[in-house]
Image (tube, rainbow, N blue to C red):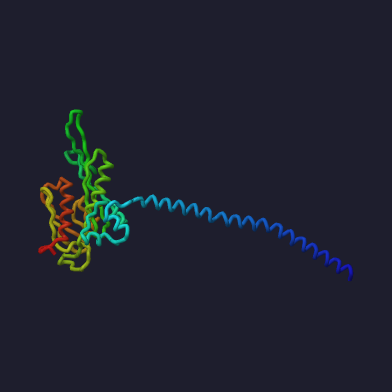
Length: 271
């Protein structure tokens, strides 16, 4: 019996030694885990800092006009509210702030002689004038902006470089944005939706005259490619177009379409 007790005591001592060894092994592992846990939030803080710097870089606009300051303060929640009160936009950043999903399209207004006597269209129109040192060239660009939901604008600008002319035309288009009145004025459809225009309208610039007529659903935009760009950005899906005059002058054609869309907001009697 005495021998059995001694054996039990020896086994207990061995078990206690093993537990002590396990504790000594587990302690450094726990310390390592705690150090890892402390390091993780540091990495996250660094990432958040980078995100904040990126956001600050995107929001560098400082308004210079009173209207811009009112927009930043939140007085106007949408572009419709601003245009409804007759506000004059003098900063293109105002439109970017109120309409973040604004899209841009370049109207091909230039042309060079093509094969067989045709014209190969170019994004910008080049004009030249004679000087003592030789010919000096200028480039003109026309850009259309819109959100495909009733907001559209058009702008024209001239510069000595393609990129500068396009950028200036884009800013000018944002300053000329309007709300397009949409509806369903076709007696064949009469659905009451906003896929077309409410009534026939016309616009004239130079020798170019454009007539827009409402159509039933599913007809699409019956026009040339450059006219489709403007009407698509305005949010019109179905319309008939008819043009008169020298439509090869694309600048006059684009501005005549814009004039026709602007006339949708004016009716007889000034209503």
